[in-house]
Length: 419
Image 1 (cartoon, rainbow, N blue to C red):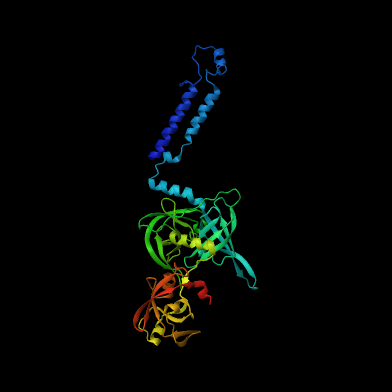
Image 2 (cartoon, helix red, strand yellow):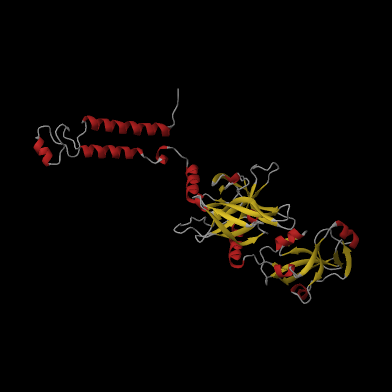
């Protein structure tokens, strides 16, 4: 015996009731609004707008109107008949509100053929969030890295060439810009807050995995404050870990809370096999909000830096120089009359050659910057990621076996590293 759900039973009940109404109207069981008693003459019926002879006293137009109303009643909202759970309603609502604000990003790159000629070729693909009705899109830097052309693919199928406004490799973020089609009001993804997230909180991800546009996946916040190394020098700290299914093509798409606000930007997965195994990572939206403002204004993120050259300690150097610690950053040189030198940071004096480089031994060893322990260059980058030129930071150093604390004004990183 076939069993039906409560929703199906309710639908069949409504349908059978409406069929009964139509049948009753057809056979004259229910009086119409303008019907007359059987004793009235045909003339009186026609004077009052009644039907012609043989119509049984019913106006054919009214019968037709009633039939149309009965048919319209069948066009019931499915949500009134199908018993969605509250959780399902939340998912449906978030998706219906925001899926058109998520774009598919495709790129073209330039390769060199056998004749040493530049040849355009298809690049990567990813997702992005429209964050401004003027056409600004937030995505990952790795989605558009090395791209010759960037295309924004909208929900209505329109493909528009976009421009890169700015990139931040350190947080793997980028802002793009495209001109919206005339007369089109863009939907946007609103920024939320990643400060007070809790493990176990429901999250939703919308993206374009494997070019399957505007796919929704649901999960929870699996962990917070995860440090993830994305390159030899860069660690993104405080990343959000989630088990919402994220696959190639999801990169750059939004991670949303149950209210439909962006709390993160889906960036990468941990996967020995290359597919989703339920360990994904997203850049916190509070980091993105800070970065987006600078990318839109300057095209880059201005960050503070020590105007000195430093070398990450490695075993051979530690043994050769007989250093008292095995990790940290050796200050090789400082800029003459720069902020670091003025604050008392000491450079090395004994030059040695290592490969093609010259390292000066005898300088201070940096062990802590702005309250963060520094064992490597990646730690150094992370410690200064959110500091601006002109700010002062506390720097702890090891000098002659003693720990010394200095307060150093930061220079502009791009200017220091370009020298």
